[in-house]
Image (cartoon, rainbow, N blue to C red; front, side, top):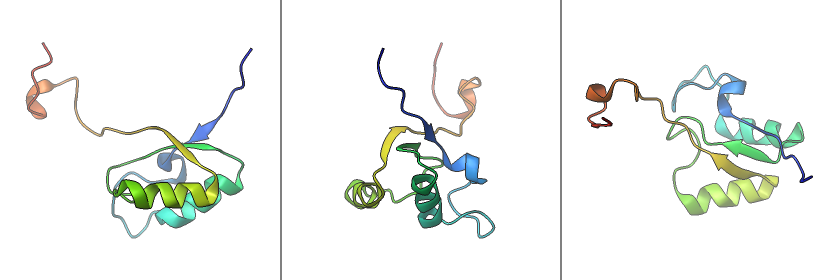
Length: 87
């Protein structure tokens, strides 16, 4: 058997939007995720975490974190709303 590595996501910290003064700041999210013992995260809404790959890697490396997933907040079950033809 392999090793199981557990991660978390910004929505577990109440983050639903890239910018909202009432939600957890991204630096605090990363600090608390690492402090809780997680080693993996998903990105959350685009723009919440730094969108520059080099800056994001720097911030994750400082905390011993890696990205395992991203998030898409779109209506993919309704292709006309996102301009995609998935049929």
